[in-house]
Structures are given as C-alpha cells and as structure tokens.
Amino acid sequence: MKEQALLAEANRINYRLRSTFFYRKLKEYNTLSFPSMVAGLTSVEHLYSWEERQQWGVGEEAFSYVNTHRNLHLFQVFCHPRLLREHPPLLGYYRNLAALSQKAVKYLVKIDVKKIESDVNNQISLSLEQALALATLFNEHITLIVDASIQSLTKEELHGMLLASTGAQIDGSWRNAIGEEAEKVVQRLLINEAKDRSLLSAFISRTGTAVEHYDSRKLEEQIGNLHRYRGILLTNQTSILFSSDPDISLLDANGVTVCAVEVKGGADPAGALERYGAAKKSFEEARRITPGVPTLLIASCITPEVQTRIKQDPLITSYYNLTELLKEGAASYNLFMQQVFSLLSDS
Image 1 (tube, rainbow, N blue to C red):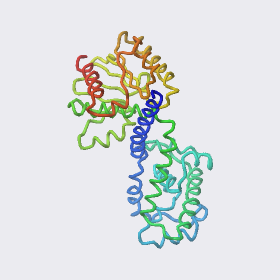
Image 2: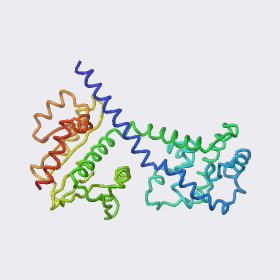
Image 3: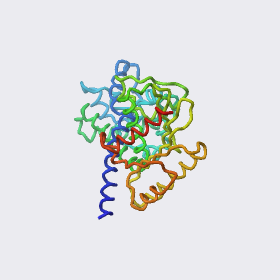
C-alpha cells in the first residue's frame, strides 16, 4: 500500500508540474506574439522581392495560392531569407509553422537554432548562408503543408500549426525538466507571497545590473518571464536569490545568507535517495560558508527511507512536501511561508 501511495504521489506532482511547465514554456517561447510580429511587417511587404522564391524552396502552386488569397500575406506563410537576417526572432515562427523541432533543424541543416531563438537581446546575427539554408528548409516543409491542404489553408490553421508544433516541442523537453519546473513553481509561490505581504519591490535581471520594478499591472508578464530574473528585492531591504547550490538563497540587509533552500522535484521513487544526497551536498557547502545557516528542503516523492534519514539529519532544518506546498492555504504552505518571511523579517 505504501508503494502504491508513493507512486500516486509521484504521478500527482508530475502532472501538476507538467501543467505549469507547458504554460511557462508557451510564454517563454513567445509563440502567441508571433502572429502579431509578422502582421506588423505586412506594411513593408512590397519592399521584398520573391523572384528567387524557387531557389528558397517555395513551390509555385503554393506561392500562387497564398499570393492571391485575400486573407493571407506572403510573410505569414513563407520565409524570406532577408527577413530572417533582419529579424532573427522570427526563426521560431517559421520553424514552428514548418512543424520542425529545434533538434530536427540542427540535424537537417547543421544549424543550432536553439541558441538563436533563446537570444532575448537579439544580438546573434545570421549569415547569408545560414539564412538561405533555414529559409529553404522551412519553405520546403511549408509548401508541402499548403499543398496537402489542397489550397484551403487559412489564417486560423496557421495559428493552429504554431500551437501544435510548440506543444510538441514543449512535450519533448518536459522529460528532462521536472527538476527545473519544481524550482520555478517554488519561485513563483515566493514572489506571489511577497506581493501579498506588500514586500515585493523589484526583479533582479540575470544580465547586467538592471532591475525591473514590480508593477501590479504587469505581474503576470513579469512572472511569465521568470527565466530573465535571478531574484527579487524586498521592501524591507532583504532579497531572495534564485541560482543553484542552493536553488534559493535568502539574504539579509547586509548580504548574509540567512537561509538556504533546495528544491528537488524528481518524481521517480528510485531516484529519491540520490536527490536527497544532492541536497545534502548543497547544504554542506552552505554551512561551510555560513555556519549554522537554516536549511529548508522541498521535495516530491519522499520515500519512507529518505524521510527517516531527513528527520535524523542535522544538516536539514526543515523539510516540506512539494505537493502540499502547491495547495495554497494548506497548513504546510502557511508554515513554509511563515518560516521564510520570518527569517527575512528577523534578519
């Protein structure tokens, strides 16, 4: 019975994290903004020549259909190599439209588009050779899609292709991201709690020394871009940092760590002991730097053996079940937040 309960617990947290992972990645990939980005370029579409379209993998019948369609623009469907060089972020739009994964593109044309697509500052440039190779690949696949529609492709179906392709990519990356998503979930919980306690002041950027002040009207957007921040500043002159080893650090007004938090979201019971060992290693280093610093372990799928070890381990001040923390208002959630913010207010 214990094994069945443990398996049910593992599956429960796995599916909860999967749901938040899909939503977060959809925001991170910027998929929903792609159509408006492309629509904003239609006013300059006449400044681009399509005379070389056959060399770029565009089928003639497909081109004719789109070019004469009253509700479609060429930019919405086909990839122009010059446009790709001018606006590298659109690479993700055409790749998804062609229903190609990042891994598939790398295999087919030997170009790692993941690095380019994740370049939030748009600093990576495409060479002409790269743009031609990518545009040709995308257009060949898009042409097949248009032809397969028997010339009935609509704008709504284009949007559907974007979402379907993005969903497949997210699902493919989910298998290796359970631990990362668990950290993001806890980070979001802390940010929302800081907001509810009127303590949230600003977000610390991961690049440079910039800070982005908390704006209640933009909080959903700011949390959606959580990957861009390495922590938050609180109004009581303390801060919460998101990093690794430990996953989360609470800093007092003088920059001293007043608490180290490790988040272990793996759902496989067989790996529970290994995850516990990794947390111990992080806490040992935290105690070496700051002797006696409180340590909090948040884990999912805690086996009876691991639970026994945790209770007897002087390295771990407190531990929490991740599933319980996701139930806002639950006793475990309230206890965790009270402990965290007491450490920050007392520092």
